[in-house]
Length: 191
Image (cartoon, rainbow, N blue to C red; front, side, top):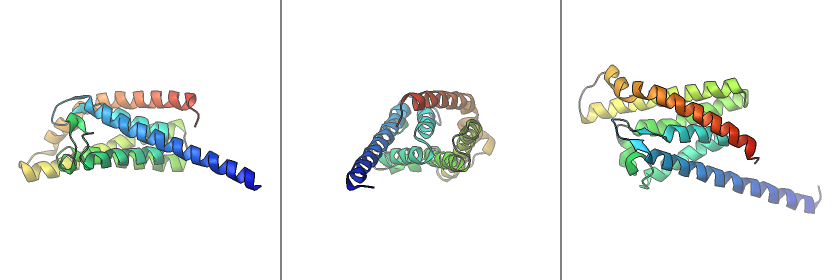
């Protein structure tokens, strides 16, 4: 390869990396905006789940997970990117912080399925469902530990009634929307 071709290839690679970083940043910002759209309950109803799974589908497992981690780090340092315009380590250490951290595990599940099976439709659907279940499990365990330490004993069924059962149908709709919009944008935006 000539030096000129190597320089052109290197410039294309750098441009691609710049585009990746831009999309990762935009998806992290989308997660923040979607978390602000909320209905306050024990665990707030937000569009955050939509934004996380959209980012995973649109960016792919690795870049989508990086976007989720950036979003969480922004909140951890105090930028009010979480539901109710909350930020800081206290928001993450509270009862609902496990669901936010659980999104990283959702990303890891998606990344694993993508690495093992590629971008096959069935694998993406299974990765979405398992990713959501992993987030639910991690968040619920976290919720129970923090709740017991701060307020006293609570049963698993009570926590599931507060934190999981009311969210199953809305979260399923968010996953379908994230999948449909992500699939459409991946066709339109070639990067």
